[in-house]
Image (spheres, rainbow, N blue to C red):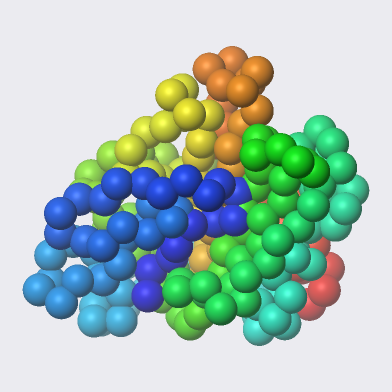
Length: 208
C-alpha cells in the first residue's frame, strides 16, 4: 500500500476521484487500475527516471518504535521548542509518530513508515501530475533520494509539505511538516521537511 500521511501533519488532503484519500495525501491503490498502484504493479525497480538507492536501509527495527526516528534534541531543532510525541503502530498505512509542542497544533512533524514494501520512490514518480499536483525532486541526502509531493500544493496556503525519502528501491519514509502560523508564506515547508528527513536518516542509519 502506498504511503499515508507522515506524522508531521494531521490534515487530510483531497485526492483525485480515482483513488481513496489518505491522511498524508498519498493515494490508496485502486482496483480498476486508474492512478498509481502499488502491490498490483510489477516491473523493474526503480522505474524509468527514478533515482536508484545504492545502499538499502533495514527499517524493521524502527517500525516497531517509530518515535525513535527523532531524538528529543532533533525534534526541538525542527520545531523550535520541546515536543510531545504520539505514536500509532496500527495505522492503516503503517506505523507512524507525530511530534508537536505541548498544548499546540503547530508546528508539527509526522514520520510514517509503510507496513510492507511499496515500490518505493517509483510509486511517487508514477503519481506525478495525477494525483500529485505537487511533485518536486529535492537534493538527495547522503545519496538517498528525496521528493516533495502532494495532491495539492499547500506550501503557501497552509505551510504544509510532505516529502518521501527513499531508503531502498522498494521502500520510503514519509515526512510531513506543518509550519507555525508565523512562518507560513515566509519559509518553504518542503525545505523544512527535508531538514527533518536529514535528521531521521541520521538517526536510523546510526541504529543500523
